[in-house]
Length: 194
Image (cartoon, rainbow, N blue to C red; front, side, top):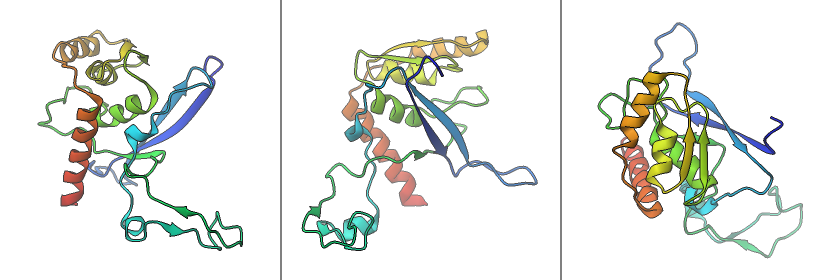
């Protein structure tokens, strides 16, 4: 890691993968989010998540004396929920790609565009560079192109590279606001049926 000054370990959690084995079923994968230097982009507002029901039930409530922030003293300051939601956690819940989805390719470990979009939104701005040295079927490159980022990607498999090229030829740029609304609507749809 000598070429990187920061690394964040992120967990991708999914609930929609069947357990076909005789042991514990896997429901997550690890993502290494590497940063070139200590001055990095973090667009926190672009990846905020919905607050839990408890937080929304008691907004603008003073911190309790016994809370981790109270330090045994009465607090007069009041925390107010951010209108765009809570700061994201290092566990991201997005379902795996399913048959019939438009973005589906034959790649055995393809990542969902929605998952990669969260990382690209959080860590880059339009015109900046996104790199995926193991680009597979090109999901990171597709997302970067959709959002007006420059990108570099490579993979050892010529077949995977061809899939990536075919996907990239179909990409159309849409605004950040479009993609945030698109992914939030998908999440709300999933939550309404779970």
